[in-house]
Image 1 (cartoon, helix red, strand yellow):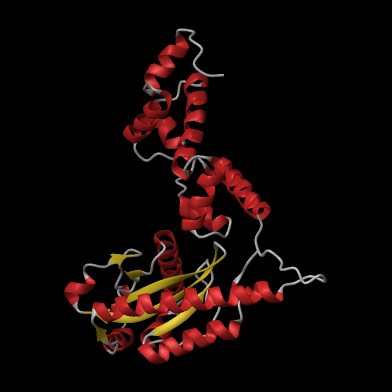
Image 2: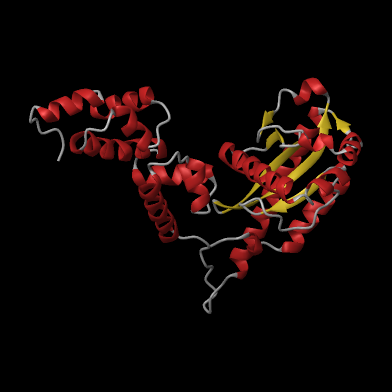
Length: 303
């Protein structure tokens, strides 16, 4: 499996350090779980103090992970407000379609009207403001224009993408066997294995509120790449596959139990019964109740 360690750690460190020095923003590299795997560059005193609190640090890690996954899903930088109200942005590190981590940058404040337009990656809490020391350090954080943040995010993505691409090319050249034939970093068989692993995960969790991002993370692929690979190999998109799988089980539950339709919908991961009925009708060409009634009449509806 490809990991951040597949890259030259000195290269990643230099990118992070140089970018922090040039922009005067904070930078840190994290893995796909949001855990820090590099030094903290140019971190504000506020964020250093916040991350010393175990409970608040968990929120920081979750913010980092969600921001990174959002960026990899959209295949572009994600600018967002963290749980403490600061503005950050995330750049995914993707090697041959494999999501290996994120470069997080920011820790700045925006002017009020600009900040209000940003997406909150987690529920915004200011409980820390009751701490006079933290409140003072927060006020010391510089206020910047959103255009600077946006331009910095685009620049960092360009740097990360090109440096990783260059490094991968060097790895291919260096990774030769005794006959000096280049080795393939990722074969179709490895992709087959990942899709099979994803299908097993879906089979075990289809009753949960799972999303494409959850499955992609489970098989260490970026959501964007996983979505394309899944559709290519299965001939159907992820959401369509998941719903079809759920409806297959819905049919069994409708015919083998007297459970109310609302309970069946909930047991299959649907928060709204109306949406469950809509999906069921689209796939089965009748409502759940019509399907159950037809079964009671002895009609064979599925094998």
